[in-house]
Each structure stands twice: as structure tokens, then as C-alpha cells.
Image 1 (cartoon, rainbow, N blue to C red):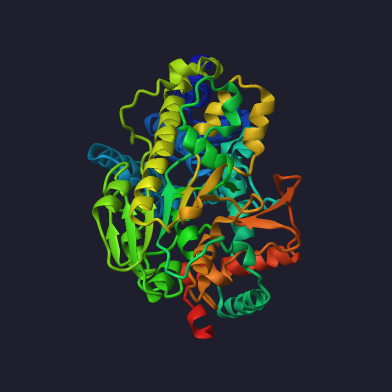
Image 2 (tube, rainbow, N blue to C red; image 1 turned 120 degrees about the horizontal axis):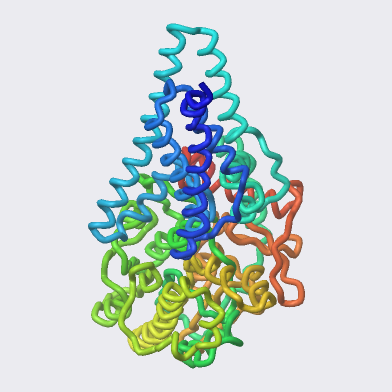
Length: 578
């Protein structure tokens, strides 16, 4: 009798053990091998999945195979997909993220990885949908024979789902660190945090809100002084302009005390040390770097653009007699084949290959002055070229402090950044040979996604780690002012969204009432803003601030978010107000 009871209920014991083994194997053993964030062990996560497993077991009429397989799907969903999302995209991933994530991911993968990624995604979401439909079907079948049990199980499913994911969580900060939250409260609670956070920061681009935002920003524009943007230069001719965004570029300045033989060129170091620092990027960094530098908008993922945005920087340059060119070392990503023509790019060349921007510039001539936007690919995972830098052998002090499993990834990103620094110098020299009066800007897009995890896993001195993790001046914005040489603004913390106005001001483009002017991030109440965050620059150290939602800085930033949402994702009420 006791033996039969044990056999009948063995699922409750084995499923708990199965969940622990899968959870521990993935989060504590497998992830560190691939430089993915190793989440702190969380008993609450295990209990959540155990509760889900019990519900699935009851709903499936105690079918063990269905329930064990459900555990595998759940663990893969919560403890594989979400930690990778937090590591790479800085947030848990939802199904609604796929339309944005796919354009950034699929196009840059080799064919076999495209097949694997598409197949895995279809299988993953297909299984989740299949289980959801199956459980609904089982509730329906139960209602045919036992309506009371069906009602109770339905209420339990609704209650557990609400408590697990949709219960409101008070968000006290303008910022959110999902890695910290997942370590404190577990992955599943992190999902709840993201749902509440997304609601707290959502903007409503209604006609009334857009009109209010427009009027507020127009008033700010009327009082603006941009004399600090003007480069020292003698001459009246139209100056050629080159702005090049660097994929996953980082110059390892934080770790120079540990570097025995610096792989970065001396000329780069001299330029970098005499350059303005800019703030860190967000997820989708490659896209946000481009649109902030070309349109002035803060991080936002545009829909496929079908309507021209006539006051984006490239259109203004085009109207001022420039030939506008977009050079992409990568293939088409982020719907840029739709975006570029609609912001004023005349010539668009994709897939020109790693380090080939300089070669394209060298071998192509234009009758008009040129405005060139470029994007490199060197820092992207899988993008690499042979070199003799011997980063590992020349930097044993640093490498000895890195977890052995992370060393190959660190070597790759260090080499890629050092090779990119060399390419920066080569590209600058080639541009100046043909366009000696050119304004040249090199701007990084974001950190290599796994770099923070690598540093976190290392035994590097905690003081150096802290400077790295707390720094909001990640890399220099390299500006070359034609025959006058390199240029640095008076203070660090130059907002990337202000790059378009900087270019417009120095090429005498009429920017009044344009989106690049309305989205320009003025320094209000001595607060620096970039990428929807707020900073001080006290004692030449940029610190992130919490600001009141009643402050002028916050209201101006929110107005710019509303305008960006309307122009790039909404109804475009903005055009009726001009």
C-alpha cells in the first residue's frame, strides 16, 4: 500500500530534483563557460518552476512525460533565454521584443546560424504556445466532468500567473539594473520588474502630448546658445564631414595599469587622451548610436519608415548642397535599408566588409562636398582578422586575473578594439589626404556584451573594477578638425544626441525647428542628459543622478521622448504643428 502511494506521488520528488539539477547545470556550470552572467543561486526560482510543474502535472491528468518535458521547456525559457537576454540586451526578453531583436540579429549571422536561430525560436515559442493551448484544452475537458475542479484550477492558474509575472511592483528609480535584481530576487521576479518598469517609463504620444512637447522644446530652442559647439577654423568653404560609428569599441583605458604592452597605437592614445568622453549606450547599441548621431533621438527602435523625415541631419546636409552617403561594413540590419533613404541618404552601400570604409573613401570621388556616415564591423562577435598583437603573451599580469574560461573572449575583444584603433588612424589619414578640411568623428556604439561579465568574474582589484562599473564615460569621442588637428570640448559628458547639431552648426546648415534642434539635449539645471539618463559632472567625474519627475530636466527629456515616439513609431502629429 505504502509502495503504491510512493509510486503514485514520485513525480513530486523527482521533478523537484530534476529542476534543481537543470537549474544548477545551466546557471552555475554552463553559463560561465560562455561568459554569460552567472546568476546567483535562487531557491525562489526553483520553487516557482516547481509550482508550475505541479500545476502542469495536475492539468495533464498526471501524465509524467508531458510534465517532465514542460519542466525542460520552462527551465530553458526562464534560465537560459532570460540570463542571455540580461547579458546581451541588458533586460529580460519577451516575445514582443522579437520584432526588434530579429532585424539586429539574423542579418549578421552566417547562414547556418540563421537556420539554427530561426528554427530554435520557432521551436521555443511554438512549444510555449502549444503548452498554453494544451492547458486551456485540459481545463475545458475537466469542466465537462467536474465543473468545480475546473473553476478552482482556472482560478489557481490565473492567480499564479498574476503573482508570478503581472503583480504591480513599485519602481522607485529612473534606472533599473536587471542583473542586480535577478541576483537578489531571481529571474522570474525580474520579469515582473521589467513589466512594471516598462509601464512606469512608457510615453504616450497622443496629439495633445505631442503639441505640449513641441511647444516646450520650441521655447527651449529660442533661448539656446550653441557657441560652445563651434570649432575653431578659418575658411568659408563647405567642409566635408565624416561620422563613423564603431562596433563594440572600447579602449581599455580603465585597465591600463594592468597592461604590460599596450596593443593600441601610440597615435591613437594621444588622440584619445585629448578627446571628449561620451556616455555609455543602451541595448541595440549599434542602432541607437546611428540614430542618435544622425537624427538626435534618444534610444528608440524605429518602425519601418515609410515617411521621409525631412529635418534629420542627412536631409539638412543634402539641402545644403552635400552628397550624402551611408557606408555599412555589415549587411542590412535594423531595417536600415528603409530608414536611411527616409532620413536623406542618397547613396547607401551595405556589406562592404571589415575595415573597408577607408578603401571605399579612397577609391570613390564626388563632385559635391560629402557627408558620410559609416559603421564598422570589427568588434562584432565573429568579426576578426589575423594579427601579431600577441595580447595574451604581452599582458600576463592582466590575463592572470581573468577567469580561464573568459580569456578567449577577452583576447578577441581586446584584439578587435586594438585593430579598430589602428583602423581609426588609417581611415583618418586617408580622409585627410583627399579632404584636408574635413570634420571627422569616430564614435563607439556600445561595449562588447560579455565584457562586464568577464570583468565581474575576474580577480582584478576591486577599486579598478568599481571605476569600470561605475564609469559613465566609457570611451572618447574622437573629433578631427581638418588642418587644425584633434579637438576636445571643454568638458566630458557630451551627449551623443547632440552630434547632429554639432555637425549642422559647423557646416552652416539651417537647423531651426528641425528634429535635431528640438531633440538637442541642453544642459539644464547643470544636469547632463544622454540616452534618457541624467548626470552631473562635478570635479570632472560624471555621476548618474536621480531627478524628480517635476524637474525641468525631466520634463524636457520626457518631451523629447514623446516627440521621438511620435516621429519614429507613432502617428507623426509633429508634421501638423510646424
